[in-house]
Length: 257
Image (cartoon, rainbow, N blue to C red; front, top):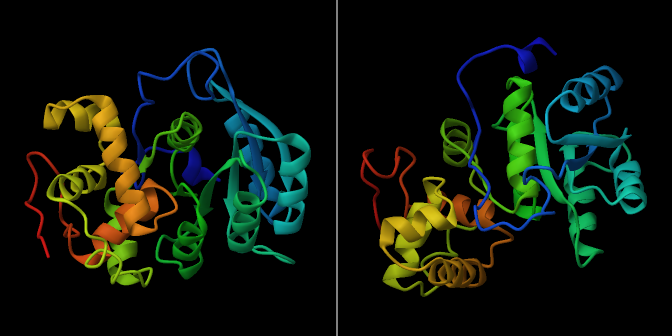
């Protein structure tokens, strides 16, 4: 658990909530994010509960020791976010994520927590609809910030960790982009999404309205068949639209296909 409290280079960074969010939205000031922690290791689970409950804006409402229990507890407690380990007995985090997102019109967000980013289970969980992932070695304040961001409807940004994972273990959807018929502006929006920009930041960068950006993002997700922004960005990386070294404004240029 020491890796969660120490300082160090961030492996997953969270963008701030969309400033257009309304009061009462989880992750906005004054509204705590309700959290369910699912991990089969009791020591890890208990440590996460204590550390995250001490963070501002986080209310831990329950725990689960495997995927079946995670689904059952999520039904009972209706948390905003489930922090989901992927390697668990009885039912793993991938299947639990898939079931949670399929059985409810308003499912909780799922954030995968893992020891190693180059884990096939993590890429499968992203494909199943998880909103992002964090590493167990992150300082706990960064894990908490990621949870707040996801609960508020934004995406977790993924600098080095996601790029390494996608380069090593693609999701197998590289054919999606060439046949998606994205417009030039939609490709541009997808590249900016890959840098981790929020919708308001994309609107400012392109000098268009926020509603226009939201329309483009929705079109991108639909055309790619992506579960969410995270999955869309993974497809952008593995298809070659965005090179692994792409850093957005002021960084290395992207490569197009």
